[in-house]
Structures are given as C-alpha cells and as structure tokens.
View 1 (tube, rainbow, N blue to C red):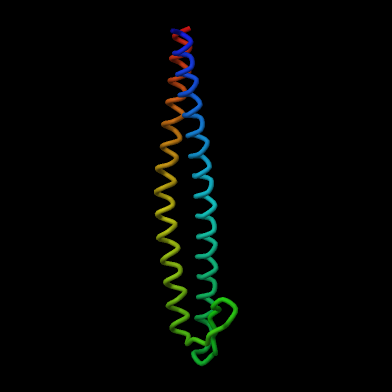
View 2: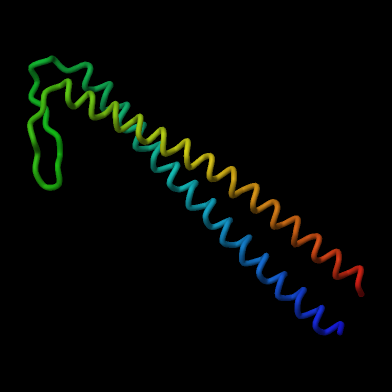
Length: 123
C-alpha cells in the first residue's frame, strides 16, 4: 500500500516540477518579448524625434521588404505613432500574462512544498 502511495506522490511531484519549469520558461520568453517591444518603441520614438526636425518638403521613404516607397511626412509620422501604440498594447498584455504566470509558478512551488511536507509526515 505504501509503495502505491509513494508512486502516486512521485508522479505528482514530477508533474508539478514539469509545470514549474514550463511556466518559468514562458515567463522568461515573455520577458524577452517585452524587451524587444520596448526597444522597438524606443527606436520609433527616436525616429519620430528626428522626423519632427526635418522640413516638410524632405523626401521620406518607407521600407517595405526589399523596396522603398516614397511617403509624405504625415503618413510616416502616423505609421510610427501606430507602431508605438500597438507595441505598448502588446507589452501591457504580455505584462498581464507574465503576472498570471508568475502567480502560477508560486502556486505550483507551494504545492510542491506541501507535497514534500506531506510525504515527510507519512514517513
């Protein structure tokens, strides 16, 4: 009887460990994505600052794949503003998901501790 309990505890322990490892990996991946989005926002803001200093008649080009398309200053400005807004929204969503996953990791770690303590009590 005790061997079946030990096997069940061992299996539950392994499952919780796998869950913790996977969730930590997801949190790490979200951190990397958030860093990338923040860098992209910063790049777009710097570009906007440079764009504001240019005269209105300056020819501007947008990179589309391997080609460049001439655009007016307003459309480039709007494109950059939209890119910043989109990236900030994605960053907020990732932040919320990260918070959820971090709480999930803590919960799983607490479950692991409880499992270990219950195993110690049975011995």
